[in-house]
Amino acid sequence: MCFQEMEYKIYVDYWAKFMEEKNFGSIFERKLAPTYWDRNLTMMDGVSIFYNKEKVKLLNYERIEFTSFFQNPKFFEQTKDTRQRLVSRNTVALVAVLEHIETHEVLFVANTHLYWSPRHEDVKLMQTYELTELVWKAVQRYYHQCCDKDIQEQMESSDGVNIILAGDFNSAPDSMVSRYLVNGNIDITKEKQMQVYDYGSTVGPELLDRLGRFNSPYKDLYDKGTFTRTAYLPRFKRVIDYIWLNEHSKRLKVTKILDELGDQDLPKYLGFPNPDYPSDHLPIVTQFEVTKDESTGDAGHVAYRSSL
Image (tube, rainbow, N blue to C red; front, side, top):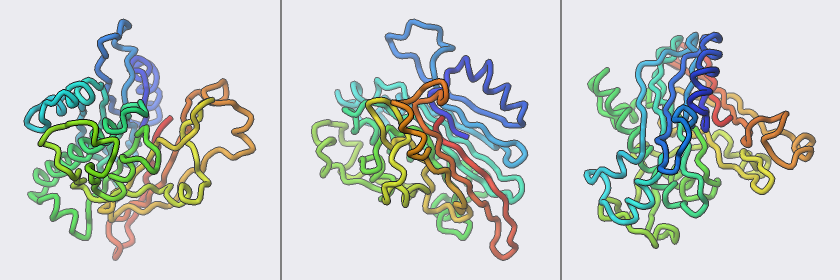
């Protein structure tokens, strides 16, 4: 289960303990406090991943603070726009390396909460690009250390690489972020929202997702217009939360997804949160079948949840 906007204090005092009683382990990454923050740091929110210890075990995890990579001249030229639009954000992510106990399949699960502003679509695209780069490096490190394999070799093998991205991407299905993930690349010279900003020579005309293409299990519902919102506020009702499955996830098969609340329920409310629904987002859930080897029929089930 992947959560965003969870306060650190609430995680420590309640969620970590409550879920541990249910035999769920967890990891958490807290956002950096912005300059205007005058409250206790324990009240700062972050992202968390909870995993069922009966089904998977945590092999490793990585905490990501995007600003530490954006301010590194080795990765990004330190232009005015880089410093003011990218470095200044306190966006974080988590990457968990999990082993499915029944099949021994390895799963890479990333959870993030991208910058919120609709006037910063460029920032969200660059954050997504950096996320895929960092997940790629995490996958590369794992297969190099465990099996002395190159990531490309593993991706092209019959086993593939099981990668799931989840979180609040604050981006619509037709956004630059979604198109980058779905297509595996994006030509930023053709994007008006990118042409007005200078991120230097370290960012080429094309952003390439080295992980390849991603697809949402909810795509058919998006296309049919039958799943139209994951955020439900009085003045904003739209899909901005996702579970993305990588094209190289050859051992993961989607078996079920959770539909949105029906039209008979939602019209009762101007928006969320309220006493019945404590979050301004609707949950999205995907159940996967994890197969080890088609010839043996060895399989298990894992369910992941994004956005509370």
